[in-house]
Every structure is written in structure tokens, then in C-alpha cells.
Amino acid sequence: MNSLGGAAVPFVFLIDFELEKPLVFRIDEVDPGILLYNLDGITNHKGKPYGRPAPEHVSHPPDFEEYLVKFNRVKEEISLGNTYLLNLTCSTPVELSCSLRDIFDRSRARYRIWLKDEFVCFSPEIFVKISEGRIRAFPMKGTIDAGIPGAREIILEDVKETAEHYTIVDLIRNDLNSVAERVRVERFRYTETIETGGRKLLQVSSEIAGDLPGDYSARIGDIIYRLLPAGSVSGAPKKRTAEIIAAAEGEKRGYYCGIFGLFDGRNLDSCVLIRYIEDCGGRYRYRSGGGITSFSDPRSEYNEMKDKIYVPFV
Image 1 (cartoon, helix red, strand yellow):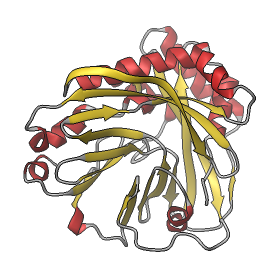
Image 2 (cartoon, rainbow, N blue to C red):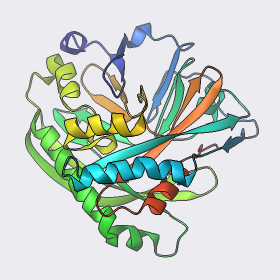
Image 3 (tube, rainbow, N blue to C red):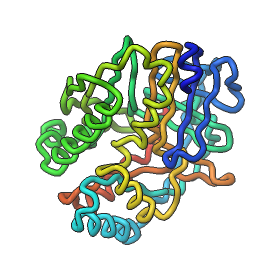
Image 4 (cartoon, helix red, strand yellow):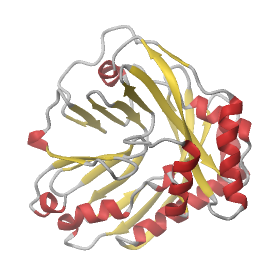
């Protein structure tokens, strides 16, 4: 990434949560039969995505008691002071009436990625953007059904969600301070509406920015790796929390909660790989979760995990 960035050669990159199997391709080397992407309109997909009935899916989430075992383990670590924000996720078997490639074609999201025989992702969450020497992050923390009367006021006044959002903003601000100067919060706790294929969710985000040195293109790989794993899908303190995640979830995340991005020779756009379905030998699993703090209620967190199991079909 540093070499390509220094030479102003456009490339895409895919980095897993555990940092064990990163992929980097020059733009002119990407095989659309293996990897498809659409990053906020920048795409290598030449097909026509619509014109057929929307495919169907049936999910089988883990039961509450199974979730509670993981939740209680995390709450114990919080009570011991080992973590104070942790993103806990679960795997949900799903039955699909289509292929993962079909879902890429038919879904609607700010970021869409398909990797053959691996996964499809339709993510609403930006990781970082770099343009004109400025790096910006947009952590998302706080979700509510937009159809609930007064949903925006409810989510913005919720004590648990507010504490969680303050924590993640502080974490991301510290992350950016390791690679940039003049780091500042430019927007705090603004809401966006996300289509879920049948209903809408309100998601709360913030915008944090910093100024990069003039030679940042030649150090683009170093910059990205110093920010990993993404704070919004790990927690704080980051290193110890990632260890607790591995123990509580009992399986590697792989590309789920990793990042995907594109560098055009000067500017960069990237996303966090959430809203994610993986191919497990012809069987499919949907990965979803949410942030746990000392204020978290297990039933509410369980319901949030289930609410995030959707495909935003058009």
C-alpha cells in the first residue's frame, strides 16, 4: 500500500479484523468475476442490478439464553475494568433464495462489496475518507427503529447510547491523533436514516477530522494499519477489548468487521464491513451485533442484534 500510494497508483484493499489475510489489488488488476465493489458510486460493476423480484431470506437467530452467556461474560469483564466498551457480535444462519452475487446486484447501500465464495457486504458505515490532505472518520453508534414516535429524541437522550457514543468518539479521536494533526470533532451525534428493506433505522454518527502530512500518500498503508481494528466494531481499550471479543465470541471474525477501501492515487474512501453475509461451504451466516457498556440491558442488546439482520433490497 505504501509503495502503490507513493507511486500514485490506484488500488483497492481488503483487510480482515484479525489482520491475517489482507488483499491489495491495483485497480487494473481487479477481476470482477472475483471481486465486485461499489463505494458510494465508484464501482467496477457493469451489470444492470434491477428488474427482477426482490429475493427472500429467512433468518434463525441464536436464542436469548445463548446470547446471554456471551453478554454476561462481557459484562463481567466490564465490571473488572478490563474494557468499558465492547462490540459483541453473533452469527445467525440464514436461508437465501438467491446467491451472494445476486444480493450484491439487488441490494442498496452506501458501500457494497462481493468476494467470490467468501461474502457479500452492504455497509452503511464509513471507516475513513482522505481528501486534499485531510482524514475524516465517521463512527456510528446508536440505532433505533425510525418508525417509533419520537425516535430521534429517544435515541439522542438515551443514557446508555450517549455514553457509548462519547466513548467511541474519544477512541477515534485518539486513533486519528496517532496519524494526523489538529484533530477535531466537526459534527457530533447527527442522525441518518438507513433503509432496511421493509422498514427504516435511525443511526447516530459523528464526524472527526485531522490534517495529514504532505507525504501521506507514500505512507498510506502505515496510516490505515495504525487505525485498525476499527474502533466502532472493537471497543476500548482497543487491544485488550479485541482479546475479550475473541474469547467471548469463540470464533474469528475474518473479513467481517474488517475494512474495504479504494485509493485513486490521491484520495481514499473506505468502509467498515458490517451488514455482512458469509458463505460457509454453501450455507450462509449473517453477522450482526452492537456495543456493550455497563449501562447495557441484555434484552435490548439482543433485539438490536436481531434488528440488524436485514437485506436492503431495491
